[in-house]
Image 1 (cartoon, rainbow, N blue to C red):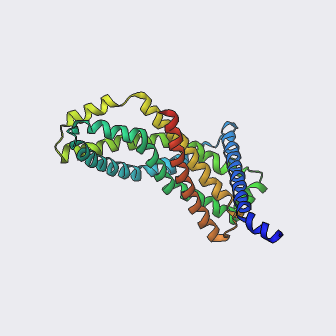
Image 2 (tube, rainbow, N blue to C red):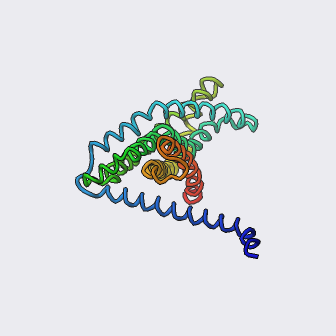
Image 3 (cartoon, rainbow, N blue to C red):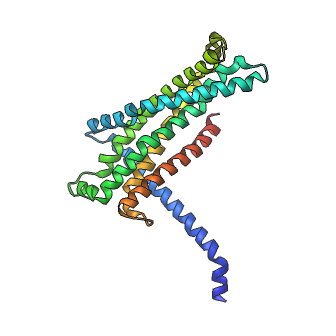
Length: 268
């Protein structure tokens, strides 16, 4: 009888154990963020390390953000023009491209590209430091590893991501102009007139709020994954670092899309 009941309830037991594990992991992630955020207000602040991370996360991401924004804007210009032309509304192309980029695609694609370029590197670097016991060495020297490794990256991302998002928006709008006006011969004055008159400050502010939230998501998830590489059950050593990096990128991208939906529900 006991074996029959165990067989029946086994799936529910596994489901409950997985759910409790997820809740526990979310709690640890939140505490990790709170801990790293609180160190922003401690003195002395690691300015030099923060500026180094601004260069790594922000300046070195410029080229990939520029190319992604230009290609996205040009594709939006082509697809939007053909879709609007079917209704005789191709004059609204500028408004369509600008609204799509500033409200949604600019913050989301910027965050995903930063995750792919900088977030994966952070997870791998901190993961290697963990398995090579460099983080333990920091603790031995009474240097807080979260304050030393995570807080500068968090501050740098909070500064860099809105700027990268703004660059993405502007370059994307120029890409839409290249497709709509340069290739498809739409009136350029009408394009930019629609851009100017369709965007208000609430749209821009909403995009920046999203970029700040995505910055927190990317940094906390990637650093947390690397920092806890030694706790992984699926692998250890070099394979553990590889799995941590993959997990960090996938989790960050999923959380970016989920939080984008939640933020859009509240902002709009």
